[in-house]
Image 1 (cartoon, rainbow, N blue to C red):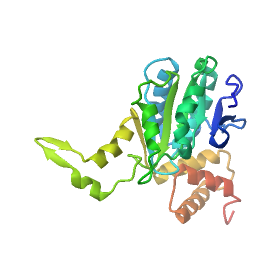
Image 2 (cartoon, one colour):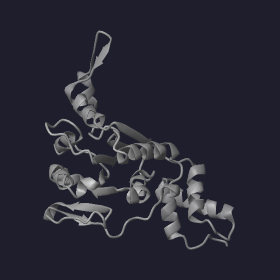
Image 3 (cartoon, rainbow, N blue to C red):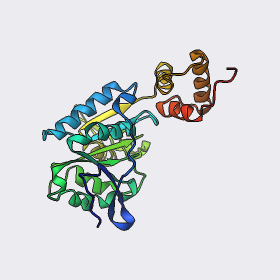
Image 4 (spheres, helix red, strand yellow):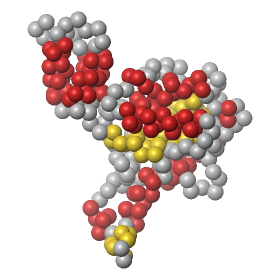
Length: 260
């Protein structure tokens, strides 16, 4: 397996086919100040990460919610914020979760223990019959061997409970005395998400926040700002989404406001 020079490289991606960590040489330059409309989520994850870097107890984090709301961008921005303080990141694809024990072993060496690692999994969710999440549960908690203290898992998902829910699953739920007892299927669904101590919810931006994000991409725009906003709204309505991602796509496709 290839080793990574963590002094030189702040991030790596697990390449399962070759069983190695590939150093990331072109990091996304996004900064925390670039992320608008998610101040509460930003501060919560910042404080959790600061505790982790100080060697204090910190939680695995699940960032869940609407698409394009800044979940993945927030994790990437943390690396730029704390890279000089020893924060490092390893991205693991959903299909490669079975390799997590091997990845953890690579980060539990004398060289790697000088740094703090975020294991990052984007768009974490599982379909019916998929059992790869069981290895994930072991890393989060549930194995005889505790994971190294220099590792946390940050994951993003569009699902709060990560596993698909079926109406039939609730048929097993019953009330015993004054307590609600879930059926086995629901308990299995909840038990995975419960292993993340920090849950952060991301909701669709309102129009005001969307236009604020648009303005951040056009700080020196010389034309009519209201016309720019109308064009940005039209762009969003065509996509039935007015998220931060949509604002960025508008900026990338912008070739001037019609009529100006």
